[in-house]
Amino acid sequence: MLKVIRKKSDLKEAVGSFKQKGKTIGLVPTMGALHSGHLSLVELSHSQYDVTVVSIFVNPTQFNNKEDLDKYPRSEESDINLLSKTSCDLVFIPSADEMYASTPLIKLDFGYLENIMEGKFRPGHFNGVGLVVAKLLGLTEPNGAFFGQKDIQQFRVISALVKDLDIPVKLHMAPIVREMSGLAMSSRNERLNDEQKSTASNLFKSLQIAAKLITSGNSLEKAKKEAFEFLGQLKNIELEYFEIVDFETLQNIPSVNKGEQLVLCLAAHIGGIRLIDNIVIEL
Image 1 (cartoon, rainbow, N blue to C red):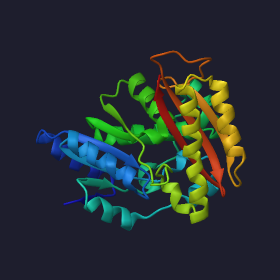
Image 2: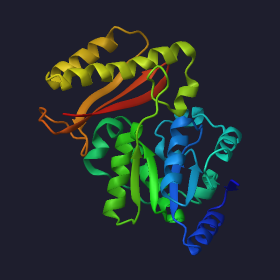
Image 3: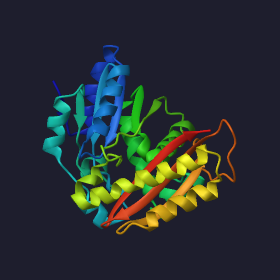
Image 4: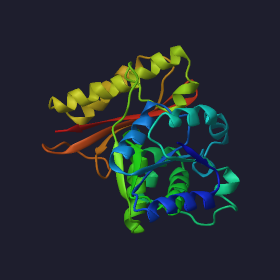
């Protein structure tokens, strides 16, 4: 039966009792407004670890836009109901005061990752991500933690955090789960109306266009140009960035070589709602 926990001390006690019995722990950090993508992470965790802990916390320190924080969808009752039908064992739903008893003094800097794509357009975002994930890893000390590929730059940031601080946890990145239209599932999709959702499906199409051109032997420049032209024909899409980068480092590459893995990443605003997506290709 799903257990709902709201205090850090109760979480540590509950996880500790499982560990005393020799159970392994999988952690799925989320900001709630759960969808099939989140639930796929829960099931993946259940398939590899004895106990699955899901956290639901809209983390204020990773928002550089207060309006975005205020408008972020919240659906606690629905989330708990969804999780009760899955293999989740514990759900941790703290308040902001519980997670941050005082304003954090520590600042995390993730080097070049702070200056590209998400880091460039959301200053301070990864400091907040790093803080909250470090807290959750410290509270649960899981054997594994699960994240979605849609936030691939976030995954690289967390990988750096774990590596540099020698945190003993295995990180798992799960594939993007998409709606029938191809739109990447996201909690922010709840804020889109039907017309905006239809428009947003073109983000994935632009990635597909560029990916097909690259795998067919065309240059990166041509691929980006075609993607830009495709999106440029559409109304109500404000493209923030479209980058083709190395899969592991997320750094720009001058050209492509056989055997390389690339990731095509974009961010765009539709009706004032910011969406991200990506495609991974292997040459």
